[in-house]
Image 1 (cartoon, chains in turn purple, orange):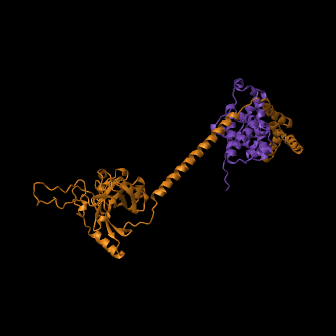
Image 2 (image 1 turned 90 degrees about the vertical axis):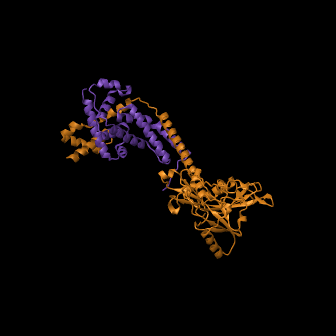
Length: 173
Length: 361
């Protein structure tokens, strides 16, 4: 078995590649994770862990091509693990105005509130499917590769997520 | 039925994502025309597209611009430093390990095949016969409470010299020497036993010069030194090194302070490795009584034991050889036997008791 030894040049190369990934994907990735977990601070921690995992991967194998899909896959798994580990019980608050005050300014649009309310109700697999496709812009085929399922399953999850979102939008509160 | 609904959900998802083909849209449309429940729960194509657009609107409205560059760079730097520290510590450990192993390898590797039963060896034209007399083992008082698991016994040999005989005859002669060792007055050098007194000046000429006959006293016929493994540096022995026989001139010097002045102290590594064997040596003594050179004439097989013997021999002071009333250079020969044993009572060596009679006295 071929052994890959990390030299100083490899370490610097890995660091440079990760810095490039951070510059290119940090905003979209952090926003994606924030929609998944519903908290900006936690999203920052998870996004940071994702980029650091990329650095460790590149350190072990400098020749490995790391794409945005790898970042989103890692971020999705990390977010789902976080939600399961913390056993977060997500629910819609009774007072939407109070919840509105806790949101950032850019999260206070009607579409954003509806989306986040629907996300809090969705199972993690449906949330990941709709986030990867409608939010991150991946096709159902690409999202299926990230989630490790089929394209039909992704479309079904998106359909069910849209049904939940439509119910939230129809909610008068 | 469920399979049909799964298919319709898949089609609805494709329409919401904008991936549906015309045929898929037509299939969905035809199913909704015949299934009111699907029409109510999923909605038409426009409804799906409008719902999906909410997600896109929410995405477009976001202005959050997190900056993770500095944080991630700091973590990467810390990890790189950890790797450097790790490599440094690993390298240091390897170097120390190699050094320790090198010391052990050069320190205790047997130099040659040794035989514990060998009792004579030839040095040039001289055959040196070693007699190891059974003696008393001095056990520390602490051993009565807790018997030591391992002890190093240092046996000071009785050395006799013979001119090189025929091999078979020499062996016979050597065995005879061992069977009945003779002990001469030269062993009375123990500092605590002044046996010879000066003649009195009262005119009693018939009075012998020597009292307390026999004029020599043996304290411990053989030299045995026992020491607990954990404290070898306090090694002591009441050795008497005896040079006897017709060729006593082979050893023409003596040690100041008695033969007990030579006190080899093997290092701890000898205890750990169970080193044992007999080291015979020669010390060249100049006319001032200072040792100038130590030669191991028979190696014990362990460098640590040989070095301990020579180190002790070189640390002693000697009485120079006197020839024609003048001090001249001479040679001191002696030998030590190191034997590892688990318990001093093993191998028939009794513990020392005060007043015990000498074994061969």
